[in-house]
Every structure is written in structure tokens, then in C-alpha cells.
Image (cartoon, rainbow, N blue to C red):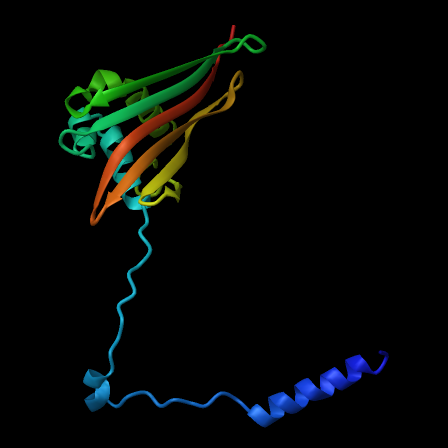
Length: 190
């Protein structure tokens, strides 16, 4: 068995040298270009742009703009998970509302509009177009997107952030908003 490895190297080397490099296939001449059939490769659908559009609608403070991302006759599930209180006694409150499209109002979206307004106040350069977002296809054709909004810094709270999430549905060239989520921890200082 000691010589087996050496013999194997010779066999592989001989096979490679006998085969030589792969053959070069010439590119078709311009007159032959019509005869070559090409298959179009559809780019991978990316939900980051539709998610940024939802962020922009929230920044604009218009429930109508957000409602446009919900299909006619559709519903929007909104979820908040907000923890608040003094250090050591933080209490969390999860809230969920399944709203018809026509019920997507500024009152319903107030927590989301509030955090994007805070993010804009904390950073004058804040813009949905440049906000780092993360999107992944969760269950085709659904995409889950999220972003962490920086809400500023203070001596009590340190870096204050909120996470905004959305579940988007791709329907051909259209994108629909199915869920909005907000997670935030608010430390109350004395």
C-alpha cells in the first residue's frame, strides 16, 4: 500500500497531460449571431428596494402611502414587541393587529412612524435609500426584510435602537406588504 499514492499521482498526471486544455470554442461572427439561441437569465428578485419604499412611506408619515402596498381586499398584520421600564424591571408588551386594508391608518402605524421620525431626528443624513437592510426569501415567494434604526445615544440608555421588519410577497412584478413588525427596548431613566 505504500506505493499506491505515488502510482495514483502518475496516473492523474498522465490523464491530465493526455487530455490537454479544454478546446477553445470560437465566438460566433456577427452574421452568425442570429443563429445562436440565448436564454435570458432572470435576475434574482431582491426585496430590498420594495422594503426601502415601505420605509420611505413610513418616513413620509402617510398611512395612505403604506396602504398602497396592501392589495385591494388584502390585510396587513402589524406586530409590536416593545419592552420598557427601569433597568432590572423591564416589562415587555407584545401587540398584534390584523387589519383590513382600509383600516391601515396613521393611528395604527403610529409606532412605526414614530421610530422612523426618531431615526431621522437622530441622524440628519438618514434616508431610506441608504439605510442598511437585510432581506431573505423566507418561503417563496415571500421575503422577510429588516433594518435596525439608530435612535440616538444618551448617558442613560446608551445606543438606542429599534428593529423594523416586514414580510413582503412577490406577485410577478408587484410587491405586497403582508406584515410589519417593530421591536424596541425603552430604558426608563430616573
